[in-house]
Image 1: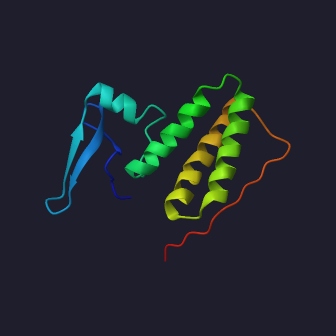
Image 2 (image 1 turned 180 degrees about the vertical axis):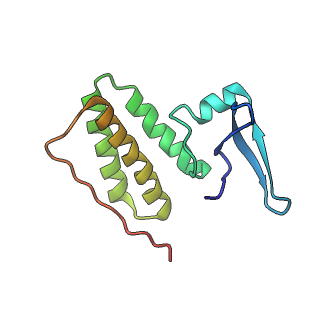
Length: 129
């Protein structure tokens, strides 16, 4: 998997950092280990593979979900957000975002042992060949 700008990196001491720049020609990465920047970038876990605009949307949705008190509310609202995103467009970026949000949804369901009676799962086939 290719490392993207905004992905987490860990130095040899295990301290986290965030990729800020990528020099493909020289095969170099620049990373910031500023605690405030790392905390802001990974406030919902060390998630890699998301481009910066998609990561912003992901963090925005998860910030909204985090504000809710009851786990059942969180699951219900996240499920609704995913459904809304799926009905908006089928762009690759949107599909990727819904995959990451769905993983968070499943994590919440497992963590709080929540099993909705009606639960729809739709998978988009990959367009990569």
